[in-house]
Length: 361
Image (cartoon, rainbow, N blue to C red; front, side, top):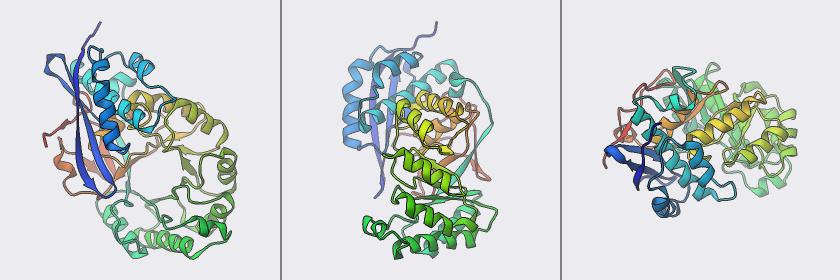
């Protein structure tokens, strides 16, 4: 029986930009082994405080006992910050367990199903010029770097007053213009994904989707809020393109409800919030029972990306993984070895654990 006990935990916050920071977790175990995880985008100060407060309870835990850890600590009734803290710690446990056995972490989750992971470039965070041309320029740059799928969030200017009009407003039309500019620039062979950030009601997104029918979109993401799953199902059944949603959900119960009632094509759990790698794998298995693909939400730093890659390597119903394109030009300096992305795919590391080490900052 393998045993490797946790000794201590620490956190480190790296400032990224106005959209948020990256919060990394270092889990120190016996034999001077350190595991890393990421707990970003969950209210940094609160998450950091929660992780530090969990230190005494973590001390002495066996990093191989992932199910026991989840059962003890990942309580569905807890909030976003708590789940983010637990998810970062769990990733670090998976990293530690892989390092102790000298195997990649995917071996802990059922082994390898694929050798590389397809990415889409989310250009939204890096697009400061929100004109149609600004979106198109960044999409063109990402394609030039080899990405074969691009995601934009062109409707962030849409407000409740626009929705209440019940017809396509100037703000919605501007979003449509942005999408058309991107498609005209990148051509028809590149997959184009559109994130609506839940800013529509069912009638208006169905009307807007009809305006986009000729663009052959890969998906429409978060068209309406998830508080009404009948509305989500109605949108899904009334539009020609696939529907993706679920980035704000964290628990098996929530995803089970969505998969039962929402009639969606893709779900987007996040390794940073849904219980880490084992949590992500459990949600993927749940989705597999309904023939839904899992496409993790991942506007994240390189550690959460590495964890998502390791997990998705073991998942039969994996679709595509988000990549936070263009946020900072020093991203590759944070980890060793740097992320290797080629032709829109990230290669699966065969090094132990998550396959990377976090450099001292």
